[in-house]
Image (cartoon, rainbow, N blue to C red; front, side, top):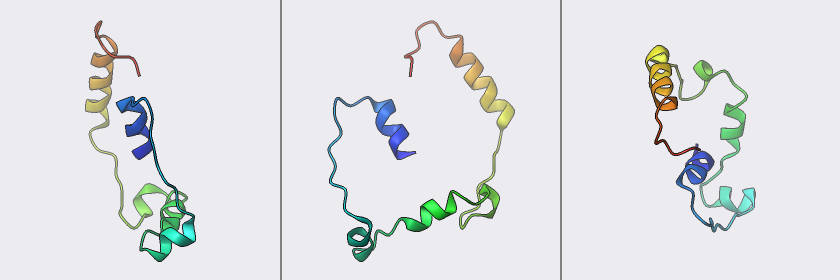
Length: 73
């Protein structure tokens, strides 16, 4: 999601300082479990995820695709 938000915002550049995982984990930012969670079905994750309103969201995307003045992503 974060990477998608960066690209959709279309900045000219993105500056970051990536710490190696052990350094980040030592400061309390251990994200290894996130990569493990991605291997699990959404309903079985630590924070269960469920899809809602699929038909409604498809209708919204369909309406967006028909807009003449949309910004292409």
